[in-house]
Structures are given as C-alpha cells and as structure tokens.
Length: 261
Image (cartoon, rainbow, N blue to C red; front, side):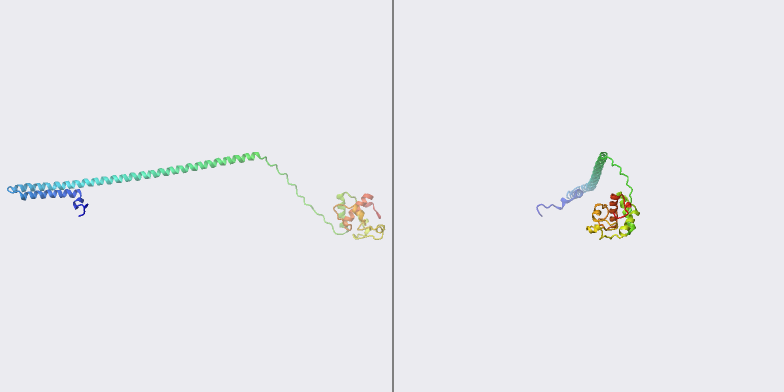
C-alpha cells in the first residue's frame, strides 16, 4: 500500500461508523458470554439483553445523526437558494437603476439640446428682425409706362409714295411745302424720272449738271441735305426733301416756285 493511501474505513460516513460501532458492541457481548464459565447462563442472558438493548440504541443514534445531517443539508440548500434569489434581485434592481439613470441622462441631454436649439433660433430671429429694421423699405416701383407700339408707315415705291414720304420728313423738320407744289415742279423738271440729268444747261456747262426729280446740283444737295435721308442725290425722297429745304430758304416754299430755280 502506498505511504499516503487510506483504508476503506476512512471513507465511511458517520452513519456507517455508528452502525459498525453497534455491531461491534453486540459482538463483544456475545464473546464475553462464551468465555465466562459457571453462571454463564445468567450472564449470557444478561449480555444478550444488553446486546438487544444496545442494538436499537446504536441504530437509533445512527438514524438520528442521518436526519440531523439531512436537516442541515436542507437548511444549507434553502440558505443557498435564498442567497441566490437575493443576489438575483439585487442584480435586477441594480440593472433597473442603471437603466433609469441612463434614460434620465439621455432625457436631460435631449432637453439641453432642444433648449440650445431654441436659443439659437430665437437669436437668429432677433438678428433677422434687426437687419430688417436697419434696411429701409424699398421704394415702390414706378408704374410701368404703357408700351406704345411704333407703327412703321410704309409708302408705295412710286411718285406718289415718294412725295408723301418727303412731306412726312419735312413736317418733322419744319420745312414748308404741299403735295401739289412738289408734284407740279417735279413734272416740269424731270417728268417724274428720279434718274433724270440735265447735260446741256449752264450748270452742265459748268460741270455740275442738275440731277434727280427736282434737278438739284451736287453743291446745293450737300448744303441743304436733310438728316434722316439718303446722301445719294438720285434717291427720290432725299432729292425732293433737299430741294424743298433749299426752296424754303430762298423762296419761302416750293409752292412759290413756278419755273427754274
């Protein structure tokens, strides 16, 4: 057997030990009866009685010890269960308390954030109000002027249209003259030909022949040209208007011209 080994008896429970003790007592009594002579019968009875009385006592002690041990184990189990319940309840209470604290902290943070946002909004509104107060009210827009469509007057490209267009230009420039006076002089001077040119009179001999509807020489045309008309001496409107301007300066009006002028 190894040095540190234990016998099988060392692993017996208390109940087992008490049972063995009872059996041993009974055995000792029987042995004493067989050894002692003489009144062995009486002594044997006495010892048998002792054995009989000893056996219940031993087993009663064993039974009582077992019940005591079971009671102790039950109490320990109840105590452990109660302790476990208490610890679980404590943990649950701590978890609820932590959750409540976390919720309160989150609520406080949200309230603080909302309060800060409200303060910023009020500050921005006050700033905008101040800016609006500082900026003067815009002046009312003037009433829109009515749009006047300019009607462009057109004239026929013939003698009648040329005379009428020339009369409109002369009216704007304050140059006197009438349709009849202009028409009469055109027919006498060029027969209504805007490209007419005199190559035989004194002006032609001097190198400045008369040209156009009212037979105007170049120097006179340039001197009495009316702005807004062409600088081409053969242009009908330009020729008529320049000639009427010259006649108004020299004779008062083209209406007063009845011959070469």
